[in-house]
Length: 311
Image (cartoon, one colour):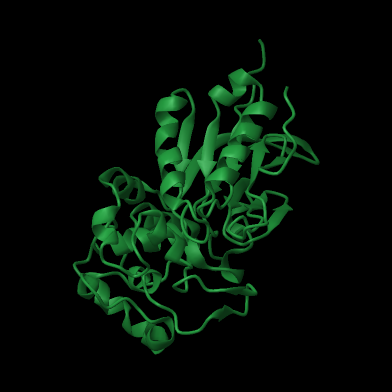
């Protein structure tokens, strides 16, 4: 009996508002993957489509168009922490299931409100903490961690406002964002699971479960509880660690080592491949850095900056 060919899986790192990088990366993927494999591939976008770069509106237009342009592909659009905050500002996230109010999540972080200049205009009273931070006006100019100047807010959201034709922090964005874009943001998933994903390893090709989540899963917390909360989009939480954490979500939780599980993320501004832990983000939100993708099963890295090579 003929062995079934492994499905091609492409995981695409943080785009951050750069349409030219996204278009170049897509062209490179299309060129380096055989046509039949590309047309039937599973494409997982790892989140953070907005902020920093100048073209958030065009990036979302591009993403929204993919299912009709490539109907045989399966597309998964994860929420990044930036996308969640953008959606929170627009009111495109679910209300807490326990009936609590978003304002109850402000208190834990209120010592940062003045420095971060949280949004206090139209609609702020019923807004999730991250929406207020996203549209706020930060009072310091320089991000010492990244070595860059802030663009409007702690999320660098000013370019996103401008891409929709409104000034940073303006409530006019609520009306400027098309309904199709609001729906796209509302439909973003916080986690995606896929069975029977093949990956090349030092011991040969393995067939694994894959979990895709923007930042990662926390160690020391039961994985199934985390997955349940992420699938339910538990918005009671003021800061979702799986979308915005750093060290706490870097490694694969021990629970997922047997049976072996691939955990793939973006977010961290690094390209990191350690066994089945894949982090695919080369800081594409910075103007001179590439947007990267990884192709499974072969672990091939493709960048927007790669010279175009036809199959």
